[in-house]
Length: 325
Ligand code: NAD
Image 1: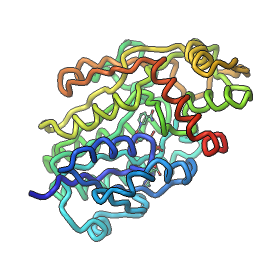
Image 2 (image 1 turned 30 degrees about the horizontal axis):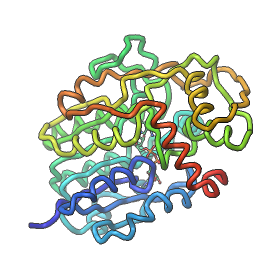
Image 3 (image 1 turned 120 degrees about the vertical axis):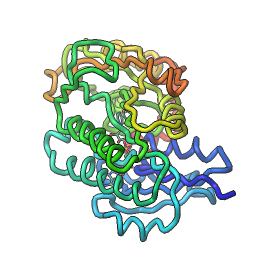
């Protein structure tokens, strides 16, 4: 029997490389990864993310820009059956999306729609889409369940909501099984350099000031990468037609407590510059994860102290590379 073939887009990125490593533990799986090593952050970090994967005979890297690939070009590049697509490639980050919404629309909506066409042509059994907690905006009805009214407040959030909607369209028109996973602030080793936990850990280690937007009382539902990966992989396996599912930790952490925790883990004091809250940033996120518990048997296990320690240890291991970025 041939191995199950996954196409993972954005596989050289933070979440992608962890998903691929987890999938390849199963010897009956092979993975094709499409990534364009976009310039949002360093190519070196992404190459480091996948350095061990490149040694596996079940891993294939296709360096290509999804923005430039219509379904017929994609068919030429991947001229073999695909079982499951996990679409993680995106322009991420709320603040840069306000500066350049068009490029977010191109990658997160147009390229997603192209990939959906390709998925239909390939007759894949599942399309997983990485959506985001940002679609909830500043909805006050906490914790958020998947039926809440959505109030996106950034172009990034709007593109993620559009991706969910296109998934619904393709499920309705072509019966493409589609799951949108609303991911809540993911962190852990290999995390993106723009993410707060990376920035804060780096600044504390370098004894440079941290810029805090707001008064420290904003909060996030931080979700550890290993927990997210299990949820993503399980979603790829279940038999459903169209679902939207939150993947969070369902525990909120105040920004000021997050910093205190990083200080504890690194045993160093933070230098803080206070600035006003930024437009587009939400004040809080908080996931109701009952649907994930029920559908995916998803039970996040890593608390913030354990997760931050893992991030710190990763920093120490790759200090030269990470402190340079
Ligand atoms: P990341 O930037 O580390 O990974 C995304 C990868 O996609 C990168 O390697 C990048 O090079 C690639 N990419 C971007 N544009 C591409 C294109 N046009 N063609 C091919 N490849 C392209 O980000 P991440 O944190 O791993 O996020 C993965 C997904 O999860 C994204 O869709 C993101 O929106 C979503 N998400 C992440 C978080 C989080 O906290 N990290 C939260 C919610 C949703």
